[in-house]
Length: 365
Image (cartoon, rainbow, N blue to C red; front, side, top):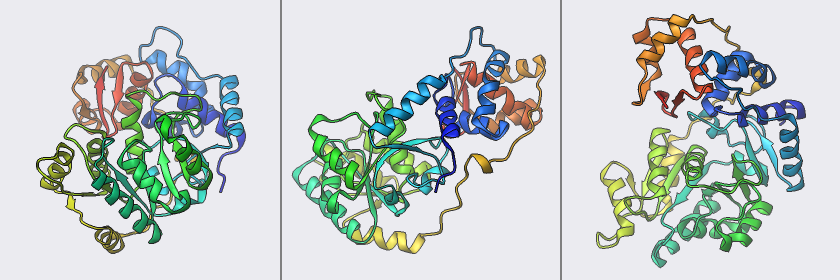
């Protein structure tokens, strides 16, 4: 299924890559103006109203065309919610990516997915159990999702039959990381599914990995943590999964092994103790409900823009601080119509004055 033509897709790339436009801001702009093309025309004025004293950097047509051509050369494509290759569950999380760059067997995105994550310095036993889980879940028809990292991630990907697994990476679709997984990444891009929200050519940085983790959990019905230290990316994925309403399973381990401290902590905090794949399968088949229909550009409602006064902006700004606060609380405390407050917050975000989190909290930058 294709919902966007080439020009619309180019405009979506331009809007999503423009300065201060994150996933939540992107969706609000589309909802307010009806299309990426219309939103792009409004960006300069909105950012000025928000207090930006210089021109907002807008991703150019030429740069977007070059990105699309590079994706074509790599055999990848940009997809949005409702199109083949965009996992249906992912669209329903807060801060879902506007576009994904994907490569491989795009039909795999339609399968029910289960994520298997864990320590990079995994034990031999941990790797063995991750392989067992991956093989058994794959045989039952689930798509095994992980992050292509060393250790548990690698073991989970390798055990999926014929590379039929999904790897969510933190860099561009053409970036090989870690280097020793070059052959595995190639295999997955040919037979499985390679997913990223980054543009081709992007080298992963530290801040990209938590963003990658929200995709791993967001596209999955359940997350299995095999081994994890107390401070690890796997625990970030587990936390995000809980916030997204996903089931979290954790494999218990010895109190003497630092790699089990994180999983044991998850179990204490309410994660389901896991000793085999049958427990996950039974849980999901009991709780499974159909995924709601995804939305795309032509179907998003258009909100009539509400004009704010200078005093309205001053009031809303006075209610914000570096401490995140629920957007609903800002609306309630301001006494202004919701449309006015949301419009002002949008202006502040585009001006780089405020930031909105995935939990719909807003704070001053």
